[in-house]
Length: 192
Image 1 (cartoon, rainbow, N blue to C red):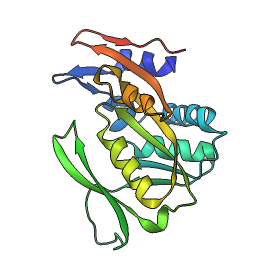
Image 2: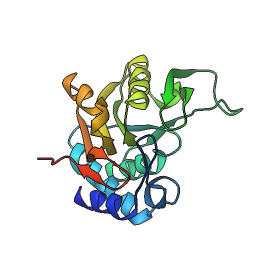
Image 3: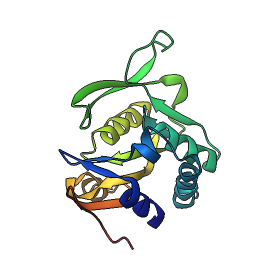
Image 4: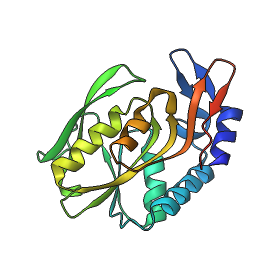
């Protein structure tokens, strides 16, 4: 998605530790119209796959998952990172290490929101080491649901998780794949 690459170059900032800050439009302040365009692109890519649920991890993936869910006309579900009083006892769980926060979370999805009849599309803002996607895949497997694929806004291709998932036969569609980052530049993979 050329528009996403251009927005990253214009508004993104590379921070130490290979962290790309896109808070001005994607995950703190959100460009609502642009988020909806991402949702439409995800629907274009996965619209013929019979998706019944869009799944993400809180918090940064929620806006993209909702936009994709709207465009696909299906519910969006997010895995919670923290236990709360309103979380039911019957949940699917997985441990996920956050590269950005340097912390392990026990993510959880209420069993009432995901079942064996579901065809699930994972949607997230970033794919770096693949920990969040792997955790969500474990939850989908635990539910007996079917993974349709993964729609990612920004993939850090140089970290290899996307290519590893593709090699395992998982459909991964990333709207922008970064091949390299320095303090001065971001280089994107040419996608066919």
